[in-house]
Length: 329
Image (tube, rainbow, N blue to C red):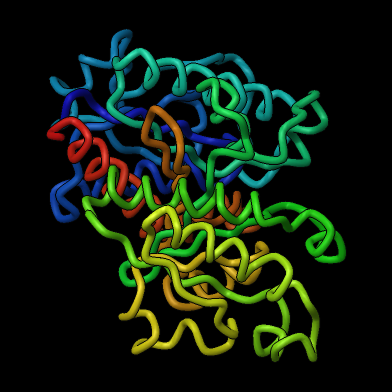
């Protein structure tokens, strides 16, 4: 790795600290490279008795990683109660995210992995972004519309064209240009971060049965097919639109490298159904590598030693592989 990975702990009252600690415990079995936590040490101590070593420079993580979980301390002094989020915790999560992004942009960290946060708590302290994806994109100087959110599992990658909007608004904001932009970002991301020279892209329809030639909606005819035609003219291997209910079984998944989906649940339901404990959220179109476990804060089980670290381990491994591939290119 060009530099150790920065792992923002997320909301200190959620399961982020626990799954980061468990990822460090399983570092050798999972083949994880050096990484360091960014956040409040008290959040780790509230859920874990393992070895922790404070660092002041990311480079120190390489030295102590084998014997202790390195942490770059952010904040401190506020009490942390697992399962009981508060505004101090939200501020700490945001500060940790900000610092981790800055370290990654500067090259001091090889990539950033973001722990789960509570949007309601962040909104209460003035956070104005739909999520961490949009925040990281803005801090990298990238327009949110250009960046794309990819959900990554062992044998499935999906990209939603529209994300955190009511389902009733999807037909109004779905455009040819939006589909084209998200697909371009997907193709570039597959090439740059996954080493797939000629990605195969499958595009889902919006309506049941992909509209049945206009009998169940015209979005496929008026928006999706023209977008596919434009992408093909640009030389991309893009097919569809396909009925979403037949796109995600095993033999269908073997025919494409990523699926472009029209709305949030169309992309996330198959990924989480197949790979709930291994799903990774990856942001494409950024100058840095950013991943996150594809689950939330799970306040109800925080502090109970019940959180599974699989998605966090996968997020760290995915970020490391992408950063290494980019560095070697």
